[in-house]
Length: 252
Image (cartoon, rainbow, N blue to C red):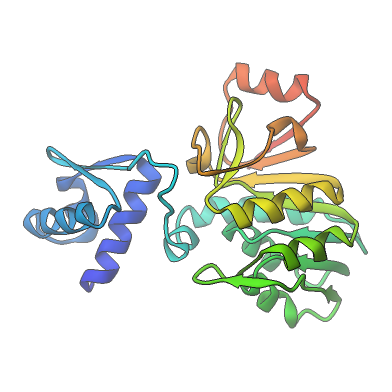
Protein backbone atom coordinates (compact mmCIF):
# COMPACT_ATOMS: atom_id res chain seq x y z
CA UNK A 1 0.00 0.00 0.00
CA UNK A 2 1.48 3.37 -1.00
CA UNK A 3 1.53 6.47 1.20
CA UNK A 4 -1.35 8.21 -0.58
CA UNK A 5 -3.69 5.23 -0.27
CA UNK A 6 -2.71 4.62 3.38
CA UNK A 7 -3.37 8.24 4.30
CA UNK A 8 -6.67 8.22 2.40
CA UNK A 9 -7.79 5.22 4.44
CA UNK A 10 -6.68 6.90 7.68
CA UNK A 11 -8.70 9.99 6.73
CA UNK A 12 -11.74 7.84 5.96
CA UNK A 13 -11.45 5.86 9.21
CA UNK A 14 -11.14 8.95 11.40
CA UNK A 15 -14.02 10.69 9.63
CA UNK A 16 -16.28 7.67 10.13
CA UNK A 17 -15.29 6.67 13.67
CA UNK A 18 -14.40 10.12 15.08
CA UNK A 19 -11.40 8.81 17.05
CA UNK A 20 -8.91 6.00 16.58
CA UNK A 21 -5.63 4.84 18.15
CA UNK A 22 -2.23 4.47 16.52
CA UNK A 23 -2.16 0.77 17.43
CA UNK A 24 -5.57 0.16 15.84
CA UNK A 25 -4.60 1.94 12.62
CA UNK A 26 -1.33 0.03 12.43
CA UNK A 27 -3.16 -3.29 12.79
CA UNK A 28 -5.81 -2.40 10.22
CA UNK A 29 -3.32 -1.15 7.64
CA UNK A 30 -0.66 -3.79 8.31
CA UNK A 31 2.11 -1.31 8.96
CA UNK A 32 4.22 -0.09 11.87
CA UNK A 33 3.08 2.31 14.55
CA UNK A 34 6.01 4.58 13.65
CA UNK A 35 4.70 4.85 10.08
CA UNK A 36 1.22 5.66 11.34
CA UNK A 37 2.60 8.37 13.65
CA UNK A 38 4.38 10.00 10.69
CA UNK A 39 1.17 9.85 8.66
CA UNK A 40 -0.82 11.43 11.47
CA UNK A 41 1.69 14.26 11.82
CA UNK A 42 1.43 14.98 8.09
CA UNK A 43 -2.38 14.76 8.03
CA UNK A 44 -2.59 17.02 11.09
CA UNK A 45 -0.42 19.61 9.33
CA UNK A 46 -2.73 19.43 6.30
CA UNK A 47 -5.74 20.07 8.51
CA UNK A 48 -7.35 16.70 7.75
CA UNK A 49 -7.54 15.50 11.37
CA UNK A 50 -6.38 16.40 14.86
CA UNK A 51 -3.51 14.35 16.27
CA UNK A 52 -3.94 13.52 19.97
CA UNK A 53 -1.95 11.44 22.44
CA UNK A 54 -1.96 7.84 21.22
CA UNK A 55 -3.99 8.45 18.07
CA UNK A 56 -6.14 10.95 16.19
CA UNK A 57 -9.64 12.39 16.21
CA UNK A 58 -11.93 13.94 13.65
CA UNK A 59 -11.92 17.70 13.29
CA UNK A 60 -15.19 19.17 14.47
CA UNK A 61 -15.05 21.89 11.80
CA UNK A 62 -18.07 22.61 9.61
CA UNK A 63 -15.85 23.83 6.79
CA UNK A 64 -13.85 20.60 6.61
CA UNK A 65 -15.01 18.36 3.76
CA UNK A 66 -14.04 14.73 3.36
CA UNK A 67 -12.86 13.99 -0.18
CA UNK A 68 -15.32 12.42 -2.63
CA UNK A 69 -13.07 9.36 -3.06
CA UNK A 70 -13.09 8.76 0.69
CA UNK A 71 -16.86 9.19 0.96
CA UNK A 72 -17.48 6.88 -2.01
CA UNK A 73 -15.63 4.01 -0.33
CA UNK A 74 -17.05 4.54 3.19
CA UNK A 75 -19.92 2.41 4.53
CA UNK A 76 -20.49 0.80 1.13
CA UNK A 77 -22.58 -2.09 2.49
CA UNK A 78 -24.96 0.29 4.26
CA UNK A 79 -25.26 2.47 1.16
CA UNK A 80 -26.09 -0.58 -0.96
CA UNK A 81 -28.87 -1.56 1.48
CA UNK A 82 -30.21 1.98 1.51
CA UNK A 83 -30.12 2.10 -2.29
CA UNK A 84 -32.03 -1.19 -2.62
CA UNK A 85 -34.72 0.02 -0.20
CA UNK A 86 -35.17 3.28 -2.11
CA UNK A 87 -35.23 1.55 -5.51
CA UNK A 88 -38.02 -0.72 -4.23
CA UNK A 89 -40.07 2.39 -3.43
CA UNK A 90 -39.91 3.79 -6.98
CA UNK A 91 -42.84 2.99 -9.23
CA UNK A 92 -43.02 2.50 -12.97
CA UNK A 93 -42.71 5.74 -14.99
CA UNK A 94 -41.93 7.92 -11.97
CA UNK A 95 -40.06 11.15 -12.58
CA UNK A 96 -37.17 10.98 -10.11
CA UNK A 97 -34.43 13.38 -9.10
CA UNK A 98 -31.26 11.93 -7.56
CA UNK A 99 -28.95 14.41 -5.91
CA UNK A 100 -25.18 14.23 -6.14
CA UNK A 101 -24.33 12.23 -3.00
CA UNK A 102 -22.49 8.93 -3.12
CA UNK A 103 -25.55 7.08 -1.80
CA UNK A 104 -27.55 8.40 -4.76
CA UNK A 105 -24.95 6.92 -7.12
CA UNK A 106 -25.71 3.56 -5.49
CA UNK A 107 -29.42 4.19 -6.05
CA UNK A 108 -28.69 4.82 -9.74
CA UNK A 109 -27.06 1.39 -9.82
CA UNK A 110 -29.94 -0.21 -7.92
CA UNK A 111 -32.79 0.95 -10.16
CA UNK A 112 -31.71 -1.46 -12.88
CA UNK A 113 -33.76 -1.29 -16.07
CA UNK A 114 -37.08 -0.28 -14.55
CA UNK A 115 -38.82 2.40 -16.65
CA UNK A 116 -38.17 5.76 -15.01
CA UNK A 117 -37.45 9.34 -16.03
CA UNK A 118 -34.41 10.34 -13.94
CA UNK A 119 -32.52 13.59 -13.45
CA UNK A 120 -29.23 12.85 -11.64
CA UNK A 121 -27.33 15.79 -10.20
CA UNK A 122 -23.92 14.22 -10.80
CA UNK A 123 -22.05 13.06 -13.87
CA UNK A 124 -21.14 9.88 -12.00
CA UNK A 125 -24.79 8.86 -11.57
CA UNK A 126 -25.59 10.03 -15.11
CA UNK A 127 -22.90 7.73 -16.46
CA UNK A 128 -24.37 4.80 -14.50
CA UNK A 129 -27.82 5.46 -15.95
CA UNK A 130 -26.76 6.31 -19.50
CA UNK A 131 -26.73 2.71 -20.70
CA UNK A 132 -30.06 1.70 -19.18
CA UNK A 133 -32.54 0.88 -21.93
CA UNK A 134 -35.74 1.93 -20.14
CA UNK A 135 -34.39 4.91 -18.18
CA UNK A 136 -35.13 8.29 -19.74
CA UNK A 137 -32.19 10.41 -18.66
CA UNK A 138 -32.24 14.18 -18.32
CA UNK A 139 -29.46 16.40 -16.92
CA UNK A 140 -29.90 19.88 -15.44
CA UNK A 141 -26.89 21.59 -17.00
CA UNK A 142 -24.90 24.24 -15.19
CA UNK A 143 -21.45 24.16 -13.64
CA UNK A 144 -19.86 20.84 -12.70
CA UNK A 145 -18.12 21.04 -9.33
CA UNK A 146 -14.52 19.84 -9.63
CA UNK A 147 -13.71 16.62 -7.79
CA UNK A 148 -17.38 15.93 -7.07
CA UNK A 149 -18.65 15.91 -10.69
CA UNK A 150 -21.83 17.44 -9.29
CA UNK A 151 -24.08 19.95 -11.07
CA UNK A 152 -24.26 23.21 -9.11
CA UNK A 153 -24.87 26.89 -9.72
CA UNK A 154 -27.77 29.03 -10.98
CA UNK A 155 -28.18 27.18 -14.29
CA UNK A 156 -28.51 23.83 -12.51
CA UNK A 157 -30.94 25.30 -9.98
CA UNK A 158 -33.02 26.92 -12.73
CA UNK A 159 -33.11 23.65 -14.67
CA UNK A 160 -34.46 21.83 -11.63
CA UNK A 161 -37.07 24.49 -10.86
CA UNK A 162 -38.53 24.32 -14.37
CA UNK A 163 -39.55 20.70 -13.75
CA UNK A 164 -41.77 18.75 -11.34
CA UNK A 165 -40.81 15.36 -9.93
CA UNK A 166 -42.76 12.55 -8.36
CA UNK A 167 -39.83 11.81 -6.06
CA UNK A 168 -36.63 13.61 -5.12
CA UNK A 169 -33.94 11.68 -3.27
CA UNK A 170 -31.71 13.91 -1.14
CA UNK A 171 -28.56 12.67 0.59
CA UNK A 172 -27.54 14.39 3.79
CA UNK A 173 -23.91 15.24 4.55
CA UNK A 174 -25.06 15.83 8.11
CA UNK A 175 -28.39 15.27 9.84
CA UNK A 176 -29.86 15.76 13.30
CA UNK A 177 -33.14 16.60 14.95
CA UNK A 178 -31.84 19.95 16.18
CA UNK A 179 -29.82 20.99 13.14
CA UNK A 180 -31.79 19.45 10.29
CA UNK A 181 -30.05 18.38 7.09
CA UNK A 182 -26.85 20.09 6.01
CA UNK A 183 -24.39 19.96 3.09
CA UNK A 184 -20.71 20.75 2.76
CA UNK A 185 -21.10 23.22 -0.11
CA UNK A 186 -23.42 26.21 -0.63
CA UNK A 187 -24.02 25.31 -4.28
CA UNK A 188 -24.89 21.73 -3.35
CA UNK A 189 -27.27 22.96 -0.65
CA UNK A 190 -29.02 25.24 -3.16
CA UNK A 191 -29.74 22.45 -5.66
CA UNK A 192 -30.89 20.13 -2.85
CA UNK A 193 -33.33 22.82 -1.71
CA UNK A 194 -34.58 23.28 -5.28
CA UNK A 195 -35.11 19.53 -5.55
CA UNK A 196 -37.17 19.51 -2.35
CA UNK A 197 -39.31 22.40 -3.58
CA UNK A 198 -40.07 20.69 -6.91
CA UNK A 199 -41.01 17.17 -5.77
CA UNK A 200 -44.27 15.68 -4.56
CA UNK A 201 -42.41 13.19 -2.35
CA UNK A 202 -38.98 13.75 -0.82
CA UNK A 203 -36.79 10.91 0.46
CA UNK A 204 -33.81 11.60 2.72
CA UNK A 205 -30.97 9.07 2.70
CA UNK A 206 -27.87 8.93 4.89
CA UNK A 207 -25.69 6.31 6.52
CA UNK A 208 -25.10 6.18 10.26
CA UNK A 209 -21.88 8.22 10.12
CA UNK A 210 -23.88 11.34 9.14
CA UNK A 211 -26.22 11.33 12.15
CA UNK A 212 -25.66 14.06 14.74
CA UNK A 213 -23.21 15.68 12.35
CA UNK A 214 -23.54 19.28 11.19
CA UNK A 215 -21.80 20.62 8.09
CA UNK A 216 -21.54 24.11 6.62
CA UNK A 217 -24.67 24.77 4.55
CA UNK A 218 -28.24 24.28 5.81
CA UNK A 219 -30.65 22.42 3.51
CA UNK A 220 -33.93 21.67 5.34
CA UNK A 221 -35.58 20.62 8.58
CA UNK A 222 -36.03 16.88 9.04
CA UNK A 223 -39.79 17.31 9.16
CA UNK A 224 -39.64 18.48 5.54
CA UNK A 225 -39.11 14.90 4.35
CA UNK A 226 -41.73 12.25 3.69
CA UNK A 227 -39.43 9.26 4.14
CA UNK A 228 -36.03 8.68 5.75
CA UNK A 229 -33.98 5.63 4.77
CA UNK A 230 -30.88 4.92 6.86
CA UNK A 231 -28.91 2.23 8.65
CA UNK A 232 -28.89 4.33 11.84
CA UNK A 233 -31.03 3.07 14.72
CA UNK A 234 -32.88 5.99 16.26
CA UNK A 235 -33.53 6.41 19.96
CA UNK A 236 -37.08 6.36 21.29
CA UNK A 237 -37.09 10.17 21.48
CA UNK A 238 -35.81 10.50 17.91
CA UNK A 239 -38.37 8.00 16.64
CA UNK A 240 -41.10 9.95 18.44
CA UNK A 241 -39.98 13.12 16.62
CA UNK A 242 -40.40 11.45 13.22
CA UNK A 243 -43.74 9.94 14.16
CA UNK A 244 -45.01 13.26 15.50
CA UNK A 245 -44.09 15.00 12.24
CA UNK A 246 -45.48 12.31 9.94
CA UNK A 247 -42.09 11.21 8.60
CA UNK A 248 -41.83 7.52 7.73
CA UNK A 249 -38.55 5.85 8.71
CA UNK A 250 -37.11 2.77 7.02
CA UNK A 251 -34.13 1.19 8.80
CA UNK A 252 -31.98 -1.13 6.68
